[in-house]
Length: 427
Ligand code: IMP
Image 1 (spheres, helix red, strand yellow):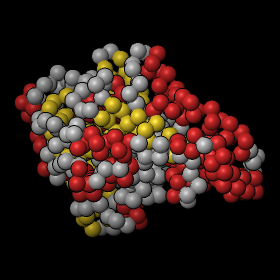
Image 2: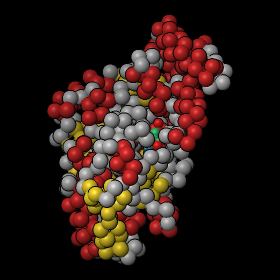
Image 3: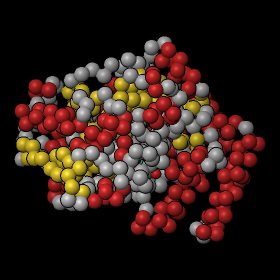
Image 4: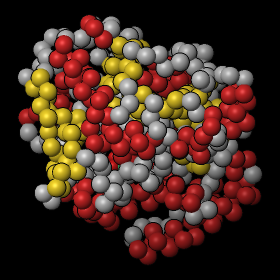
């Protein structure tokens, strides 16, 4: 079973870093297939805490080759500062591979992201402001700049010219900004070329050869299912496909190669940025989840919106990703509540609805229908097996599993690498 996909089953920030890192020691390659430095993974190793945005979590496991696939968008300055930060702490990053087909987040993409959000006013998406959407837009409009373009100055110049022609019209005439100079951009981008060179590879070939040799490859999704451009709560989404199919296009492996798809599911729900969120809490329970769960964005430092577990979303994630397993994270955060509400269905304009509505209007009107499960007060952070959990915590997990449509194969009971209960092995 060599190829696994690990992805967020909610709106991102489910604790994917911990899950990937847990497997990192046993896998040969960890691959990011979409998104960019809008992601934020926190990995705790011993007493060290690492915040990763662009690099795959596997970078912290010595035997593992980290790969940035063709579907990722790369801001070279962010990449270098992340590499420098890790090198300063003694982490070897020399095995990193980056697809020559990955697109570059240029400085003008970051500018366009920020000015577009400003112009949207109260309709804004609440993006991370990292230039993600405009870079994917350039890719789809066929005016994107790829890593491989850095090695042909004449091609690079032509491509930057093509990309800036229209944008400069927009920036100067609509957004009232100064035009961006082609020469300056080309110079900045060329300045990254030498340092990037040793990492640049034909990652599609490398990964397919690795799979032929029965190596274990882990595809690590950024963001989450409900932020998917096709399957999420559009338009309040990111501009890529975090869902399982994205691993195939974003890394260049066929769907027949993927043996297991693991959804990371937080024991409650969070969301960053704008958009509908049926179980969102605006009371002291929401504040408590935020405080106890440390729900503050790794990338943006923004407070996350918090709410109860939503089984409708979990069922949807199972379906749209073909999930084989769940990794339930942050169960320990729920310790201390007398009873824990779980959303089992929605009420939409007086109707009970069991599945995620495809209509945006309906989803905006969805009100949670709750079932109340008994809570627990015992410390669960030392639990090593399922039977170590108090009965009510066991029942909470079993109820979530039943409602969500795939087995819960691991449970996170604390932030550390070893604070995990493994029920079924992923490998
Ligand atoms: P963008 O990805 O910066 O374009 O932002 C689009 C939406 O996705 C915004 O609502 C962001 O808050 C959200 N988003 C992007 N990356 C993450 C993430 O890693 N976790 C949670 N939300 C994210």
